[in-house]
Image (cartoon, rainbow, N blue to C red):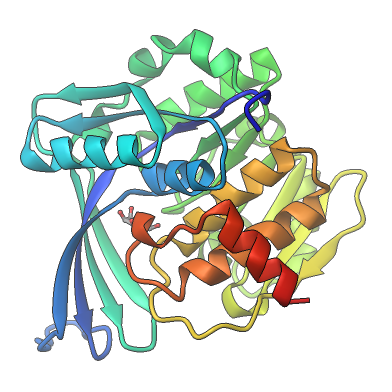
Length: 305
Ligand code: RIB
């Protein structure tokens, strides 16, 4: 791995405030939870930690606040061996996510961006050399959209492949599609881009026709549908596991998918590797805390044909 170019993640860094509850409360309902934890999260940071645990050289571009969460979040990334030299510490509150995890593993999340909102195009242009040297850039939509668009332009000009996870889903301009190597929505997010209820096979064709090079449509327990120009489309079925917490599972998939693609795997093999990593992650609590090591994923794949 060490000879490969780094994976650069440009994205959010949050502190997750997680309440465990029998079920997701309805509007206006108060429920008594069973436990509470404060754990590092944020879609960007989660993807960075997922890739680093699998042995990749990962550089993070983002921002945390000057509060206690900022310090803890930076420390946690450093412990996971993510290079944080391009993470700014700026005045203001760090991003937080208020999360409920139900006993059946489902979750609901409210994110307050805090200093993730300060990850501006100007801030990332400051790290142009780092982005140009990346093997793959990972993006999500928890930082300002104009920054995501600026990052995609920079990567397109430097021929750096981008994997965009459109989470949380937001309308995207037409110009972005040809700049994406991979687009990885879950079922809910996909609905915003192609209309809901379409079979994945049809939705994938629609997205490829817009110019995106590949799509990995994440369908939870159903698996992942992969389609890319010049490749046979494939369903990678999910590994059957007992999910206790799905927070960060999509991030785990993206981090692991990037690692495996960068190592030269075919898209289908990379998606299988990433599905195994995500399957392990849902059997554990927390977002970053649940990301598996390379040894764990290899052992899982060896016993799950
Ligand atoms: O994808 C999971 C993440 O979404 C959580 O860690 C939370 O911070 C929100 O950003």
